[in-house]
Length: 87
Image 1 (spheres, rainbow, N blue to C red):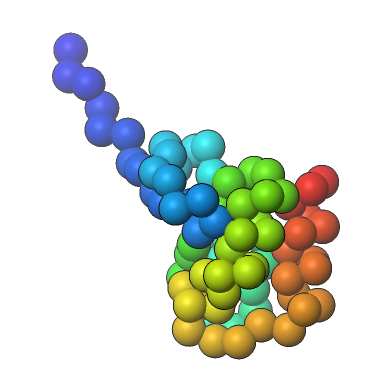
Image 2 (tube, rainbow, N blue to C red):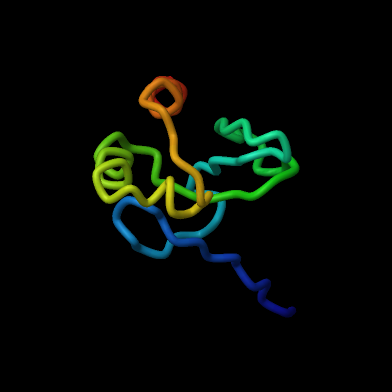
């Protein structure tokens, strides 16, 4: 039996590689709206982050989320992402 390849993604906060299913996807749709993608199947550009608040804090401090999507974010959007991540 063949072994399946497990897709790996890098966390924006800790910069470590993890299996895709262990990370949470942040997606930017074609209108520029940014939100969390619980299913991992929404249309748009995606970036991945660990499911803990420490990695989110590191990503915000390093401006990794802004660099991944190539646009500035307001603190409201980042607060919304943090709230959704904690729930």
